[in-house]
Image 1 (cartoon, rainbow, N blue to C red):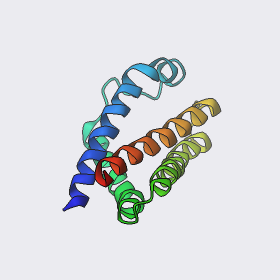
Image 2 (cartoon, helix red, strand yellow; image 1 turned 90 degrees about the vertical axis):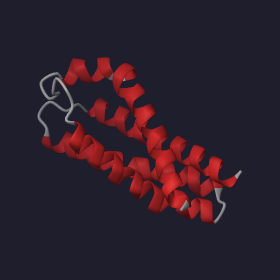
Image 3 (tube, rainbow, N blue to C red; image 1 turned 30 degrees about the horizontal axis):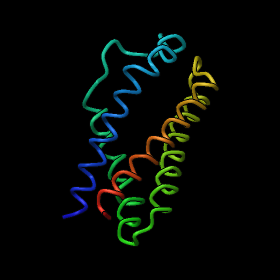
Length: 130
């Protein structure tokens, strides 16, 4: 049952932080460079599916193992690496295949995903081990 609570807490934190990032912090960067690629409104069905799959992966590969072994290091480093690998997959694919995708966008997004996922992992770990 803890896995369900880990999932719920992680997805809530992840979505709130990502909404803040996409709504305020990165908006100027993305709109300025990728205006031709962005929809006027996001399609929430694939966005919801993406978040569910991402957090299932985070719980399975990072959160559950770190909480089970009570390893703060694994939670932080594993979360950072999970974010780095998953965001790198997306961003490097875009860099390789999309005409107007910029290298600096790839770097910023990979950095954001790594930090975000590491922080989410750290918070969820802390809540479930203390």
